[in-house]
Image (cartoon, rainbow, N blue to C red; front, side, top):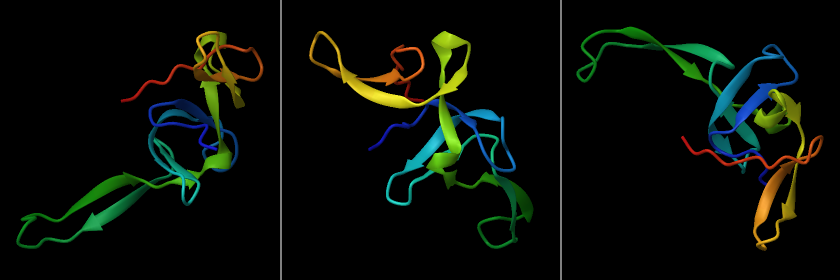
Length: 109
């Protein structure tokens, strides 16, 4: 089930970038990976060719596994939390933080 969406604020909970916060730039449900800004940055060397008149070094964000990040609950001082779904009074399915019960609002970039 897709619990992390594009534009969510997340915190890396394991690995080299543990403790780093950032927004989700891309979600790949097939491979269960997410791309987070300022996380897993690698340098790519681009050679000079007819399109690019100069060679350059570009920094790109590589994806990490979706289990290595946790959604931040902005209403509870940006604490990482698990997410589950409930139905509100209007009958709409919403995402809710497990720790506090606060609704996690979807913000698309």
